[in-house]
Amino acid sequence: MDYDAAIIVHLPYVAKAADVGGRRLVYFEASRDGVVDREGDIVAADALWSSRKLFLEQGNLDLNHWSWLGNPIGTGARPEYVIGLPLEVKRQGRSIFVKGEIFSNKTPPPPGSSGDWANWFWHSITQMDPPQRWYPSVFGQIKAAERVVVKGREVRRITQVEWFSVGFAQRAQHPELPPVSTEPIGPLAKAVQLEPAEGERAGVTVMDLGTFAKALTVGVPVTDSAAKEGVQALTPESLDRNPRKVVPSYDRASRTVLRAILRRKLPPRRAAIAQAFQKLGCDPETARAYTERLLLEAARMRSDGKRR
Image 1 (tube, helix red, strand yellow):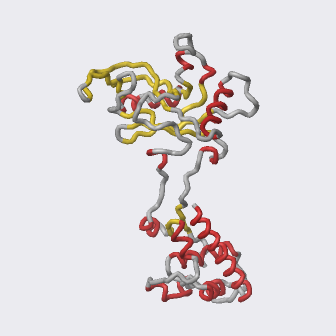
Image 2: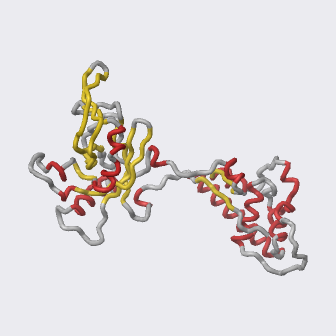
């Protein structure tokens, strides 16, 4: 009997940073080629993309570029304003996206230290209501540039740069870019997901939460002709002709029953489900108990899905 039935259910939920193992993850669009910033510059996507290795290996995330320029500006580097590090850089069309991590502290940090500023920043976007808005601004050493005309205005387009940092500020340097997010955005939000047809080829049943819950609800009509096969679809032929009184665990048996229901080879009705459990080796009493447990879990799942 095949108990290892693979089922993937896509849940309508995006994990927030605070939910990811306690790590302080942030996501943002760092730059968009063609957008003129407040200083009249455009940063070419190719320029940042070519320097991503330097940024990932040696760069940082800070507040207002103060770790590089000082606070006030021009008073010298202030490393205490470094609040995190970049983890990943992605490109999508004209835009450059970054995933970063804000520092955490194993013990209370000294006042005014990097850890203290990191706590302050993280509190402002996760514990305040509404959360504070912080906008990204790239920082680096310009190596090459050209003059271009955008909407009748001549501006500088930076074509080569050594990318050192991204600073978070409360005033947007790029008016078209969204603020820093604690949820994945752009290409950073894309997960590897199987489509139903791809899953079928791989021997995996793929569906959304609504389909999953409805398939387990008593009375859902099954129109697929394959359902006429009933519980026989659950019992592949075996060379072992000797009867064995081994009662399968609920987890194993329910996975097999679920797969048959979701593939519409078994009507989602109480009597049919109980019979399917018996075919898997359960005695009538255990089969009834397994059936009631499965239907109860399905009802709870469907109720949770409606509340989302």
